[in-house]
Image (cartoon, rainbow, N blue to C red; front, side, top):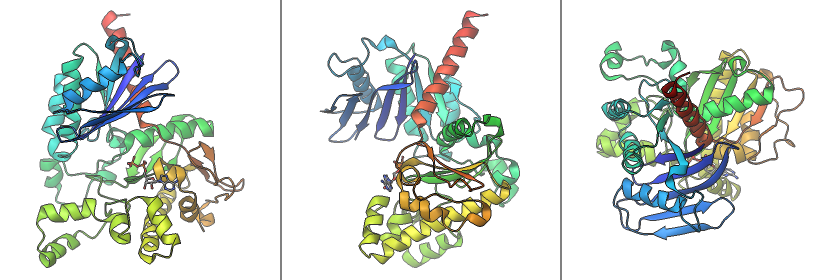
Length: 405
Ligand code: ADP
């Protein structure tokens, strides 16, 4: 089965076409600036040079139309006709109460729209991607894979905030957690590496990228995670502040005369490593500036590392010692020095990093010493593959049920 994976943002669409026979990526690409001047598609057939096509794309349907055209293109395409694409998997940031991936029906779309206030920037954009695909491929089955679903196993004492109970009952204010597809993927890989069944692994999964979150996994299930009601909570990130004292919000609004939208923008887009360093949200730039003696860049890195260590320590203690700690996503997979500093002086709780083994980027491997009680794993994440796997499984099950035993 060939599965098209779609990640639709407000003005962009990322895509991959995956051949499930061997789980290889046939082609991938990105549409940017939808509905704006300078709309562009960058398409890459595996093994070929990237091609860039600039043409007006007024909406997501126009964007997906061009993607499908490229996938079936004589020169740059990878399928002979659109019918070869047997299913579409959509990445959905906020799945509300959905506990696992589902086949797309009108009810699913309605449920997403009904809960769009929970993720007002993401949900409408995700739904636009679904609707564009439905319009262009009405007979192709589709599946939604939710970033929140993996965390639906968190117990109430973890996901409830200490607010008046009505805030939860009336407005669904609770911890949802994000990056679930990534945490689930690395959990499965870690179980494989540890030669254990997924239902038996206890892990601390550190997804450290532009957005970062750590997840505590017990018996293969998410029991806690650092992101919250929104992805703003938890760790210091590229541009997000992570946990701060909520009283700061009113204080700063009063002092700076900021509106609620302005403070929201500051917390989401101008804080974190960018806000502290004043250099960049990209860790490579910040590390370089710190090496050149920029003290605020160094401070930003120190803050990031300290917050990661805080949660690793807490989750390791709560699990009474996991089997492994996982590093994944851009920084987790590539940040050699950052990994070393995060794991420094943690031998008391059973974490010992081997600096030589740690000298790798983007490779699935162990980086702990032989005497470390807790394994340390680097696992490149692959959210698209996870989405494609769920999509194939659901679509195949559906076919069996329709055809009958
Ligand atoms: P996103 O959340 O957008 O998917 P990524 O997982 O791609 O983000 O992570 C992006 C981050 O990873 C950037 O801050 C980037 O600096 C960092 N990163 C990528 N390569 C390296 C590297 N070699 N060393 C340190 N950080 C890196």
